[in-house]
Image (cartoon, rainbow over all chains, first blue to last red; front, side, top):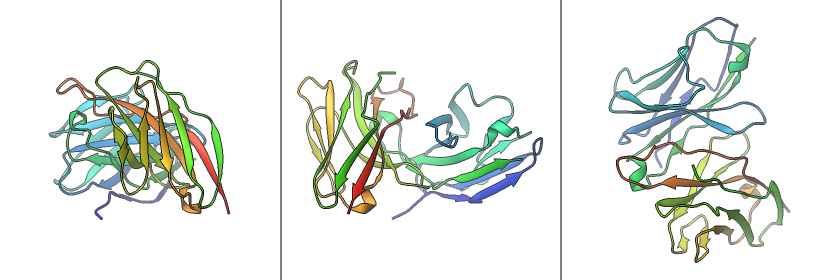
Length: 116
Length: 114
């Protein structure tokens, strides 16, 4: 069964550094998402992306965050200047169609980001 | 977004059925009921979804109350691998105006005893 893959599985960075988290969604999927989960807390929506643009973003997704689909297969999340509070598990997800068709989201197993 | 209420935790024995309840008294007519689960150290995983009728798939069954104000996820024979957090999520199905995102609550932590 096709799956969403994320790299790296664990990323350690220093405060103020830029990080790029990478995801390869399922190949025929059209909608892409990033979520995060701070240790012991809920899974939180960050951003959704369709047709090469952001379709929705949460309050968490401020100017420090950006997303890109650079080459038709990868989907990346960039954090420009990391803060300690950005430490979390970041999940990428993709879905085949829009929510109006109740297309389920398929999640990767996440990248654990540790900011020191 | 309409809210769901789930018990914080439940316990089950291996090979016994498990009924995970969810209350959603403010559900709207266009909301589908979705269930996802999150195994330890993994991303969320889709389980099942439904609108009005009961649904079955290879993973579970979903029983929806006639007034749609509650639903129950049924695992017919729990295994140790089913130990996870189970999330009940309402997702608006209005075409063209609906957000694609899922909003996760705190879910139910299911422990399965051997």
